[in-house]
Image (cartoon, rainbow, N blue to C red; front, side):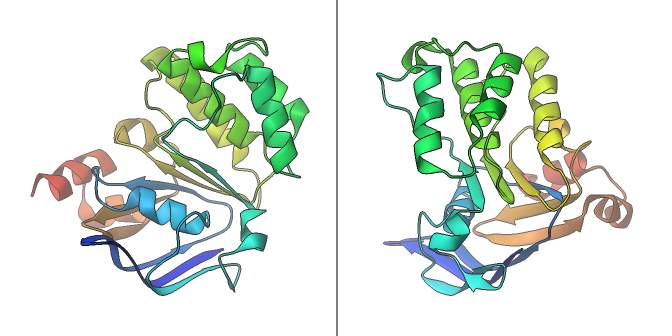
Length: 229
């Protein structure tokens, strides 16, 4: 689905991504792991077509990232992307105007599951509810690739299980999900593949079970080892 070959992205003097090689396959859930500044968000934004690589090749279904790929990729950023006047209902209409694959019926279902109301004002939501709103809006699209950047941020431990279950349900046949999070223990039980990024490049990647077997430790323990150095 997505293939990165020696991809790099530089912002002035900062090399955010360097010589990155990665293939994302259909129908899998990926954990994109690494501390702040490791290049995770930059990679997601490049796949979403929001920023362009400065070197290398980045393709979606064997074509360069562009207008057509944007129609198939749903990206949830860490930043708020709602206007202050919006209610939860307005957010749904906003997405419906922008994305042909957006389902208002699915959105309403997810909003109810997330304990939100269509009349709630986006700017007045707590950080946890605002995070749930972003997840609902993103997963209401019928995309082929979903990329969720820190979707569990601000969500309390009791609500995380419901959010994670909602993410898993979106991973139907032929759909791929990439989740970036510092909460590795929450992701480990649900992911098929793991990608560890460090200083802008991939240092470990592969089938989660194979990585555990090869390294002789859990993904959580491996995370501690890789980033404690």
